[in-house]
Image (cartoon, rainbow, N blue to C red; front, top):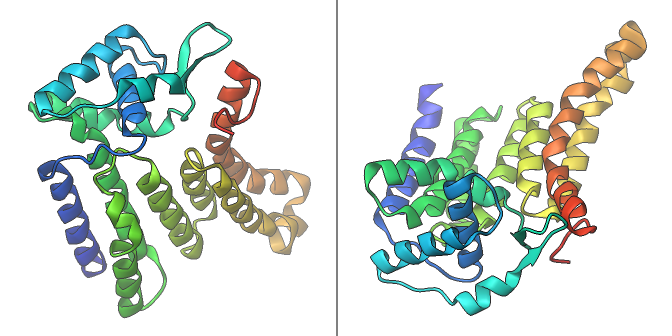
Length: 258
C-alpha cells in the first residue's frame, strides 16, 4: 500500500539529498574505488591508464582535497593481459558509473558519485521492508533499525560497505516476501564486494530450490519441472561468481587480496 512505502521513501530521499549536499569522506580505500570509477568513466574498463590518474587529480584539485597516490598505486597489479587492475574488485565502482554520468551532466561534483550510489542503495533497502508480509508497526520498526544501524556511518564513504549491507537487507526482505530467485540475485550482488556473503547466497539458493525437490513440483512435473524450478535461482547465483572468475582469469587466484 502507498502508506507502507511513504516513511521509508521519505527517509531514502533524505539520504540521497544528504549525499548530494554533504562532501564525501575520502577515507580508507576511497582512492582505489574512485580511480577505478574514473577508469570506467573514461574508457569503460577497470584497467588503470595514465589518463585516469589525470582525471582524478583534476577532480580532487577542483574539490580542494588530495589523496596519497603513493599508497594507492601499489594496490594495482599487472594481470595476465599485461594491464593494471586494482586488487579490490571493480563491481562497486561500476555500480557508481550511472551516478558519475549524472553528476557530470548536471555540473555537480563527480566525487559524490559513489556516496550518491550508497544513498540510493540504502533507500532501496528501506523500501524493501514495505514488501514484508508483516503488520505496519513491525515493518516500521525494521526500517528504523536499518536506517539507524552502524551502516549509516559509511553513507558518505566511497566504500562498498553500504552496497553489501543494503543488498543483503533487500535479499532477506525478498526471501521473507516470497520472491526466492530475486532474493538470491540480491544476495549475489551483495557478495560481489564481500565474498563471505556467498554463504548467504548458498542458504537462499537452498531455500529457493527446496520446492523443486518436494511437494507438487517434484511429483507432477518430473525432471523437467525440477530443472525449470531450479533455473531462476541458479542463474541468480552467477553475479556472486564473477569476482572469483575475473581474478582467476587475470591472476590465477580466486581472490587477489587474500
